[in-house]
View 1 (cartoon, helix red, strand yellow):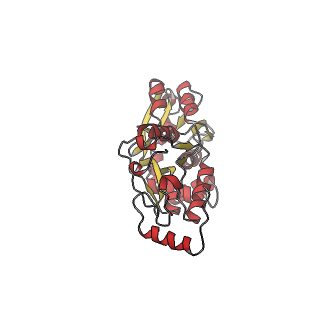
View 2 (cartoon, helix red, strand yellow; view 1 turned 60 degrees about the horizontal axis):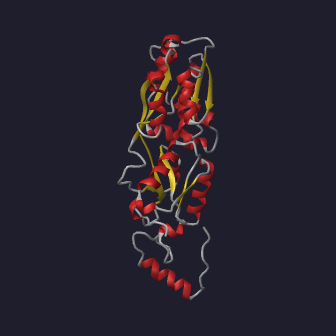
View 3 (cartoon, one colour; view 1 turned 30 degrees about the horizontal axis):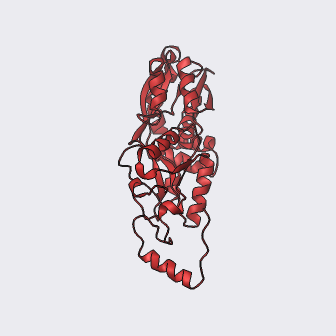
Length: 298
């Protein structure tokens, strides 16, 4: 969004005056534009196939005060670039965000309150497998069934990966957390080159869990392939048996439609992480706390 030019003396005085009188829908450094006007009635989003993208569309439909708003679909990388630029210039931005993610460690952010719950509640990330997986690969099943970690673990892998790679970061985490890994592999026998196909999604949270699981399974003698696909393809691959397992599904809301479609043809091993969350997010310097404070586009 272009910043309007202002007069050097009179304009500066006006900005300071308005900044001191700003209401709940104006940022601290705003002109007389509301937050809604400053972001041009636009929410910055990510990939069209992401579960959070569908939830954002539901939010635009579910709130009357978001009439005329648009969701600008992009990519996760594109969204993060725009976020970084906005924060560097202390400009307003409203975007689709989720935790765990390194962005909450890197920046001072806050979720907008969502009274209607259209962006979902606190969620869990589950592990799912094909129907015959336990019978055919009992040791791998045992490890993935035991795989469970905390939000802080996942964020540590994601944060380090920004300076290296997810593969290196995952390997370092496994090396530094031997006690937890030993709990996962307890009772599982090692194998000799048995192949296993994991499917994941192309987002940092799932890269973290999938590559940590890959590193652990490889220590046990497995040859592991991880393939990143859209959520719809992920569930289809598990249901038709072309992939063995996934640690990526967000439930009960984000991937609910895919889960309900395929639940008779997959095995849900349960939660591998709790405390995940989606929402509309803003930098903490923005003077707004709720989706309901936004205004419709006239």
